[in-house]
Image (cartoon, rainbow over all chains, first blue to last red; front, side, top):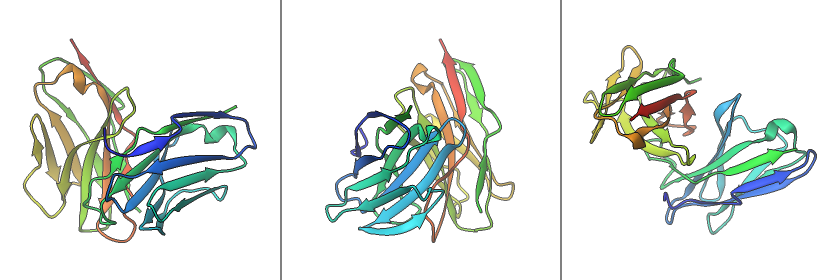
Length: 114
Length: 115
């Protein structure tokens, strides 16, 4: 158990819908990262937050957005869902925003868009 | 831009044998960190080993060791005395030292340990 929690574990929805994925980092970790794992794209970095502020952006679609709240939990919002958004979404956390830190991954949220 | 390449999509080895997974990477940065992550069937991503680019000494963690060749931009993972629990996808990942601290992952190697 990494100490990072993600809810829900599984999510099934329809095209055009909007969903919210939630992540609670390890106690004391200030950085939260979101990754998407799909069969055709592999593991892709989406976005990073550090202590409530956006720190870095990756290949995140405009239909996707995220935020980190004062209690450091983070939410990833996916809207106007398409079939291709079906993937495993991971949240990871680390103590700081430094690259030498190990990133601790949550169990992931499996999103299926029908 | 950073890239990570894992050229072995699948490997299998007998239990107790030694196996080496390959990884090459490309970055223009001089300071960076390399990681091997393991993803068992449970899908949980677990850090196996980490290497700082400024350190010449290869990292080791129990049965896991790396062969880091900075000039060749190569970072292979050796698993000794392989166990059934080592069956998993293994991802090589790169993290540069400043700016965008994202992990760039390779496409993974599916390792199967045969009893």
